[in-house]
Amino acid sequence: MSRRSLPTFNGHSEVSHLLLWALAVLFFGVGDVVTTSVGLGIDELFELGPVTSVFVERYGLGGMVASKALIFGGGFLCWRVVQRPYRVGVPLGLALLGVSVTGWNLYLLALVVPS
Image (cartoon, rainbow, N blue to C red):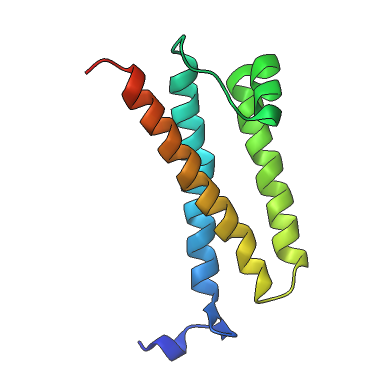
């Protein structure tokens, strides 16, 4: 199979969009939720995000998951509406944000959890 056999539009394959969505779910969805929920069990740590903190304070882990679902839903709607090639920015942005916040959470956990 050659690269030309993949469906492309302006150099961006549908595979790259799918990969970016998978990375967004993995890091912004799962990674952030897991590391945040672990961190919230430690007295020294708290949710920094102004919107997410309201959901977490009122509804706990379910509120955090609901806020992520709303963000992913809005992101998916934007991805469907925005024309190519610009729509790749939606999953790319969520993936980069997810890697950043998951990395930050892991860093903070490493600081406060005794080894």
